[in-house]
Image 1 (cartoon, one colour):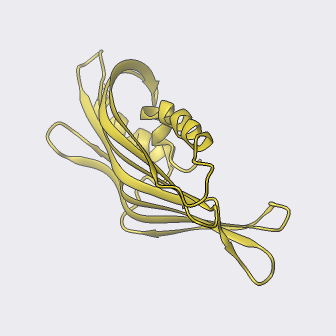
Image 2 (tube, rainbow, N blue to C red):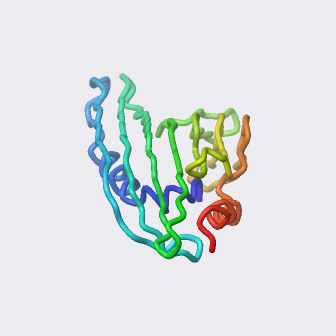
Length: 185
């Protein structure tokens, strides 16, 4: 799981992204297709053992480009702010995500016949902070997820390159510790 926080705040965006992939332009060398959406909503959910009331605001821009060879590349840029309130004690914590994710369906063909794909994430993947701006967890900078597959499409190698503080990096326990510190009794 690349980013657990997206499951908390942005579950619907994954479905949206999958739909956009299916709608990628078919003709090679076509102009980019850009989809922009404002996000706004409120909902209650269970997070880290707490029932919380959420307010979500932000924007999502998704761009699909097909080059002259027919290779599609994708870029998703999101700026999302989520406020969680514990209804039992009215304590509040904020989660903020502002970053870019870029990848392509055309990898790099290696001399041994394998193909390497890279998914590059930049920006602030996660910042958890209180109403007094005390930062409880931050994860930002550069992350590249690199996967190599053989000619059958089977994964033969995978690794992650990171630069910058990555206190979260998919660690659900670290996220829950920060949320509990802010929302706990």
